[in-house]
Each structure stands twice: as C-alpha cells, then as structure tokens.
Length: 447
Image (tube, rainbow, N blue to C red; front, side, top):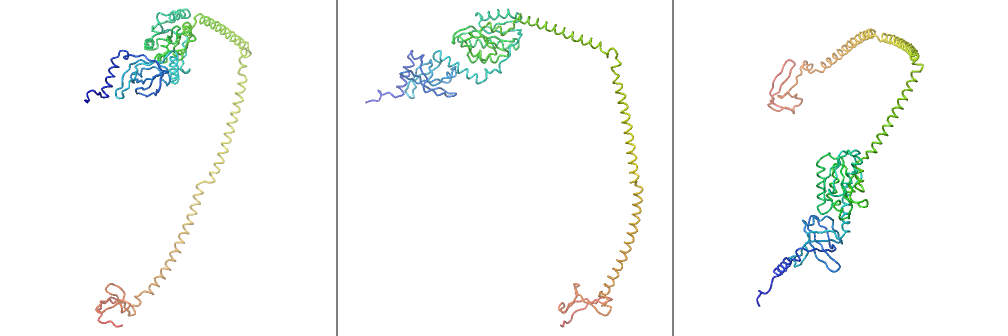
C-alpha cells in the first residue's frame, strides 16, 4: 500500500481553509448574539465567544478593529458583529473574525450612553463649578445647527425681537447621521479658532429619537463643547430629551426659542429697567439736594453763623488755661532741675579728687617710710644670718684641719680616699696640703 493517498493534517486544514475563503457567503457575515467568556485584554487582541440559545462560536477581534469600538463590551451583553469566517490552521478549528461590533437594539444605545456618561462624569466634565456665567449683553452669538432646519429661524427671530444689537452667525453642521459628529466638531473648532470674537455659542437641533440625537452624545462632540472658550447653551431635542451635550454645556434650554432668550436680554425690559433706574436716580438726587438745602439753611440760621466770635470764645479761654498750665509746668521743671543741680554739686565737692589725692599722698608717704624701715630691718636680719652661716662654714671648713698639719687624699679621678680598701699598689694619689698638692705612688698597702 502506497502513502500517496494519505494527506497530512496540514494539507487537510489548508484545503478546508481554501474552501472557507472561496465561499462568498462567508466573506462578510452579520451575526448577532450574546458575549460569552469575554475577558478584556488591555492593548491586545480580544478572544471571546458569541452564543445564542442553542449554539456558540469562537470569535477573534484584532486590536486594530477593537480600538474602534465605541462602547465597553461586557459579559452577557447582546451585540451585533460583522466579519468573516475562516479556519485557524494550527488547531484545525474554524472561528469568526470580527471587524466591527455594536450593541444590539435600543437598549444597547442606552447602555453605551450610560457608560460614556459615567466616564465623563468621573473626569469632572459635568461638575457645576465648571459652569460659566452667560454674558448679559452679548455682541456676537455663534450658532451651530443645521442650515435648513427651523432651529436657526427660531433663534434669529427671537434674538432680533429681544435684542437687535446682537449679531448672529450660523456655522452650519449636520445634526443627524454617521458624519454628524465630525461635522459638529469641525464647526465648533472654526468658532474656537476665532478667539474671543463670540460672546456665547448655541448648539442644538429639533426633537427626535435617541438614534437621531445620538451625534450629541458622541464623546468627541461632548469634549469639544467642554473645551469651547466661551459659554455654551445647549438646545438639543425637546424638554424631555437629555443628551450629554446638555449636561456639559454651561446652560441648557428646552427649545431653540428658550436658548435665544437665555443668550439675549429683553430690550424692552432693559429699557424699562433703565427708565426705572433713571427715575429712582432723579428722585434720589432731588431728595439729597433737598436734605442738603435744609442743612444749609439750618447752618445759616445758627447762632454761630450770626455771631462767629462765639465760635472760638471757649477755645480762647482754653488756650489761656493751657498757657498758664504750660508756664507753671516749665517753672516747676526749672526749679526741680536747679535743686538737683545744687545737690549734685554738693555731692561732687564731697568726693573732690583733690582731697582724694592729698589722702593718697599722705598714705604714700606713710607706706614709703614703713617700706624703708621694713627693708632696713630685713637687711639687718639677713646680714646677721649671713655672718652666722659664714662662721659656721668657717668652723666646719676642712682648711682649718689642713692648717693643723693634716692632709686629705684623692685618686686620679678626684675621688676622696677614706680607706686602704680603695688603694692598690702602684696607684697614683694626690695629697692635698694647706698650701698645695703632692702626687705620690703607692709602693705598699698594709691593713
């Protein structure tokens, strides 16, 4: 039996793979099902299963496709997926390769909206402290909406009726469809690029379903509204419709007419308020003038104005009193200073240096005389002690003994000989007499 009729496993898998690739019905398949075994892998390909009540298929979604998914898939969520079917050769198993994934049904849109709203709220985009105050008298208003809808007509009619001074510029954009989000962002970026030209911006459209209003829930649109340099009024849908643009905007209007009313003041009300303030100002000024006139009349009729000298009578008396008190105070101070001077002078005389010098001279003479006397007594005592020591030294001097005929002997080293034990035969000895020395040689030692 030959081996040619036996295929390798690789050959069989390759053949089946070509069958899948050549089948036109498997090139682009639209599936719906429930996510199973879904474990999110960060920055990686996603591997999971798609199942219904009776069957299940393995699904692979490469990272380049998964990064385009606009919601967060979760276990058990029903989704729509688009892709193709092929065979994974190394394992010999067929699987679905997903290229697009969307939540299934209207409930999925609500789920996607809820996830994005939670994400943006966590970042603080909806916080009240980020809301800016609308300008009271805007010069220019930018409007982002459809050029053909009734929104721009309602806004212009209302704004021109309330505040004709305001200039309204339309930045047309698509407000529905797949490209609406990009169109809205592009229009807002055009407005932002013009710096502080516009005082306020209105973004909106008419009512519709959740799908119709969905561009105003797109993340890029919401973030662009948050980044606008001027206050933003959102008027999307009807009063019961709420989009993420409504939450992130600085003010939310239920209708385009209400948005125009938020953006502009009512000129008639403002003029009436000005007239009211003018009347209050005139009445206040007249009241103030009347009060000042009455006060002036009271001053003119006062005793002080009729007899102005009375105005400073008390001051003159007070000046005289203060002058007398000043003179008394100065005199007392002079007297006290004079008395202190006399006391200090007396103390100075009592401690005069002349007396101290005389006393010190007298003490010096006394101490000098005492020192001389003490020195004489001291020298006399020392002379006496010296004489006694000299006498004792003379009495004990060996010269006295030499004068009586005695001698003393030393060896060659100058040591005194006091015993025959220090002498040997032939030693040289020095004999000291009272009037000189003699050198002798030892010829014999006898004990």
